[in-house]
Length: 282
Ligand code: CAA
Image (cartoon, rainbow, N blue to C red; front, top):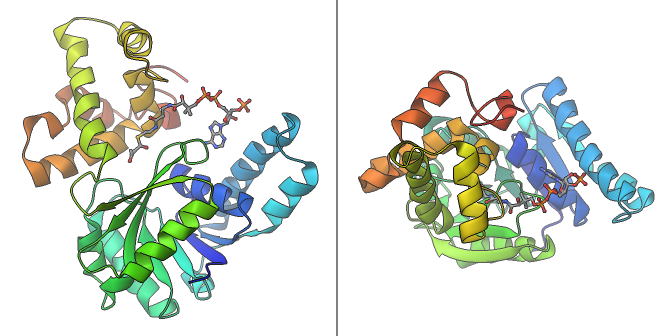
């Protein structure tokens, strides 16, 4: 399928980042948010990052303006009716995603591919809420989406080759690296990264080190681009706890379960960078 127009549902950190890379790659994008204010905020954030690229000489102002011109925001899901591909990036709750996919199926063209950016839920379970699960795939971007090259392209139980190939083709046109995989808990990266980050948080208490020391250990001793506490703050403590719970529920491996320290932080509203405080203050 020749994908030209992409819908992105949910313009939070992930959705806005996905919309940004899509307009930069020349796709027309319709981004859906629940209010005009949130849509405008995401568009402003995208414009800000593209303007930084202009300031740094990585883009011309004309290229930025053309890219921004390819972005439309909407509150009505029906505005996505004409999209060839819709990428969902809403809250990580199965019920909410299933309800949305049911609506997308009703509103979108029958040949449109429907993708979820879920990081830890089952793509197959999301697809099961539709009567056309064969056109549902996972397209899992990494945070921050404009900077991280990987997209896991997830084949659910009933995904067709055509739907998977359409997603792979889009990832290539985005200039990103695709890793096709099957729909297993955590797919590839989170299956490894979630328990690893949970171990890191447990080590804080076991070895009695500060977040600063742990981050220094992992950046200087293991070559990580950023330390685990900085990374969990970036991902969002709530997002990480939720992904851990989802993986633990499926795999029942103790290392998947979120460490109590992280759960307490989440409950106290210390969500990391987005809330202004997590392991660090922002
Ligand atoms: N969108 C667009 N541009 C952005 C951005 C964003 N969200 N965030 C930062 N940038 C821009 C910045 O503006 C910056 O330029 P200026 O400051 O000059 O304006 C530019 O990108 C480079 O930023 P940095 O200097 O911070 O870049 P860096 O070289 O330090 O690398 C990094 C940053 C790529 C994030 C690197 O630290 C890294 O690879 N960290 C690990 C991230 C990681 O592991 N992510 C995966 C998380 S797990 C996940 O996502 C899975 C899940 O399902 C939860």
